[in-house]
Image (tube, each protein chain N blue to C red):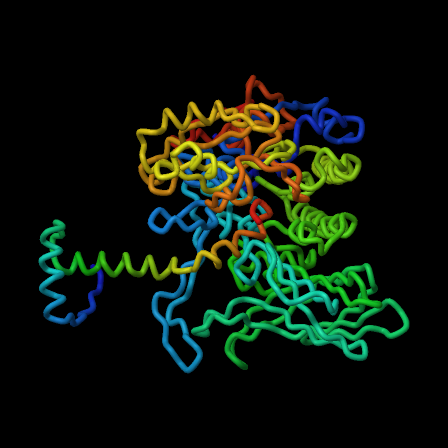
Length: 64
Length: 576
């Protein structure tokens, strides 16, 4: 079984999230929040600027 | 039944992968390539069908997994993020720590960052390893970080310590020069006072700092006032380097957290000129195999063990520095001297790999033919032939050392001239299609409106060079991605005719002026075109029975040599 951590949410955001979760067909608020956090983490992990991305590629020789 | 000689000892099979070895060039020079000629006479030789597109990470991923690109998910050197459309290296990515702690300028990771391969599918040698067969995989492309079977050293895809595919530094005291960045390198204006200079060597971005400032070390240089010699020192390592010559590998510890954490790198220095100007080339800062800061081997200790016996080698994925030549930092002889150093490294690695090879499967990779072909093809044939001869001599050494082993020599693609550069996005704009399609990568075309596919395909195949009327595109092929790969796959692969290629700007999604321009770069040949124009080569000690062998047949063939049945997901056939 996965261990869980409790996170406190602002009431207004919690109410909006509950509505959004229902509308989007999530089985629970927890599932919706987990998915939202996962997506945000994925963005964070990929958050290099275009210049940085291009700089990383240039030594390949195929680009300049 | 497995092909066992005795308990725990399996037949020896060796594959030498020579990136970019071209069948037409080989067939023109049999007399100069005696070992390949002997292999052809005593065994077999054939052209080998490559992948579409015929790009190294795509082709090697097919060799590794036996899967088509639609399945292994590597379609180009460059993919784009479907949400942001930003380009990124297709083969691997680094995932930062999930949680950090801020402390002054530092942001301390509370969980480790990791590097993941983006290639899908199992490597064929993992099926061998499952059966207890020893496998050694040396620098095969598209295998960074290396898979978890046997003993492996990473190759193409491995970054330098800055996280790039290679960034050199050129130090000069030329008063006309300024410090700036160029493609693949850094130009640094320096002061030399009384023959003494302190050069800042930029290492990895310090991910422990919130500003990710580059960690650096000082390279102390003292130039002899009368003779063409210099003394260089970094940390405890000192080298005497004569003008026009190279240093050995110089290790350096780049401090990340003062007195606590550092990252080890290494570099080579070329004293281009010591008098009257000061001109010093410093290689990309490679991962030091003696104390690797990145996952360059399986097991982690293997790189250190090999380095202890064979010395350090270029761990950067593509170590030949074509960028320095193209930026005018190297002239051609200097570039060739650098590629010879890389080849020396590879020969030492090969000798060490053969010394350790007692049973099972060995793959060894040579990069030197490919990178030199990009620069020498069609204009410097004698220099390119020297490179081929060197590779041939190494193959001869393998045949001499392991006369009883099954041997396969293969490449991933051939070569063609790159004379004219096609601005594919500019063409899409000219046809009123830019809102419905865009090009990114060296062969990829993405459709935002799928309904235009027939029109785009038809018009591309009719696209003629305004300068001479030649048809510039020989094939336009759907990618047929698996469901897992649909979000990253281009819709179409554009196969250019020989002599043409996507322009440099097209590869990054740009649309510069003009439909087609002359390629005036030092990078004069390429293979990112119609795969029929650039077949690969296949030599084997065993008779090849297939009439038209394909790259994806090779993993099936190699497994069959050990009596291992074709895994269900592989669609190739044994060539034997």
